[in-house]
Amino acid sequence: MLAALIGTCSSPPPQLDQVLRLGELHVVTRTTPTTYFVGPDGPAGPEFDLVEGFAESLGVDLVIHAVDNVAEVMPYLLEGKAHMAAAGLSATNSRRAFLDFGYPYNRVDMHLVYQLGTGRPRQIEDVIGRSVEVVANSSHSDMMASLAQVYPEIEWNENADLEVRDLLEKVALGQIDLTIADSTSFNIQRHFYPNLRVALDLELGDPLSWAYRKGDDNSLLRVADNYLIRAKRGGLLAQINDRYYGHAEKFDYVGTRSFVRHVESRLPRYLEVFKRSATDNNLDWRLLAAIGYQESHWRASAVSPTGVRGLMMLTQATADYLDIEDRVDPESSILGGGRYFARQLERLPDSVQEPDRTWMALAAYNVGFNHLKDARQIVGWQGGDPDKWVDVSSALPLLAKKRWYSRVKYGYARGWEPVLYVNNIRRYYNIMRWLTQDLDTPDDESGSTEAFEIASSE
Image (cartoon, rainbow, N blue to C red):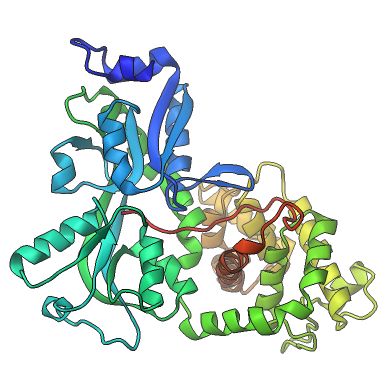
């Protein structure tokens, strides 16, 4: 039915009319964590969130057509199987011959990536003689083709079966010397492969856009552009970027390597207790473990400078509130920490949705629920959305400034600390999910916390 509506008939109706008449917006995308994936709570991903909002603005149902790699997107669209593509596409010259591109909703840098210790290419001439592999039919393959016109000695392979995250793994394992990755992909995957480094920036600010079949009228494109402009001005784009990319902006090379080692050496002795605590409180055990690592690096005898003790770093007042007799006992600490974090989740109003609910509960675990309330009040004063973590995380540091903390009920707080705290836990949690993905079974999944694994756009 869809192909008949948007196919090659002599006088098709305007594309927007097709969508409204059908009552469905058909979108082709890729199955990658930066575009679309099915998580524990259903469909998710940056492209999905954005295009779902667009479908809602039109009053139609969203129908996703997911393909495995970027090479399949354009043929799918050209065959009339979808109205548009929301797949993290760059508007390359080769694609512009067949597709029209709309408003650029994001920009990424294009990196040439190598493995530390293998010799950094400091100029394009240094690429000659080294093995290079990129995703086929991508902006990265177009870049290599343009480089080869200037440097004919450069050789590279295109891979139509793998995505950027797979090629980064091949670089990390020494199977190839170099690949190209967008900044979003690299910022995440380097947490998994800390030996990866950027050799050169091949392009800065490469725009990503939704794509439409060339030759169709632009009625749908124009309405989509207006939606994206409103999404940018209204903060929706910032919220989506924070949801999927916020925790990856900073990178601690030494800390990541230590964390991976500690997953192997320290976590096993506490693993079953984390799982039990998560099951008791309807949480993901990996999130609780990430909290524990941030608090104590999984050291049961840890003591903070302020006297907070134990693996989950409970204060004496919190331990008393939870009826914990020995907060240094690791089992008591983990079970108590799970109950205390679940309590923070419960205290938030129903208007705070996931994943913002989890991030705010983590901030409350760190700085106290009352200070979180003060920060949400400041957001309201500033005209922001107190139910969105991206806004609350900007307000929390203001609690250390007199002109703000003097106006709120609970006063001064070191408000930058919970922001760093949440970002660190998000990174640890993401790495933990990746390291334990082979252990995921129906019996092993605890709770309903969303997965926020992310890769890249090509």
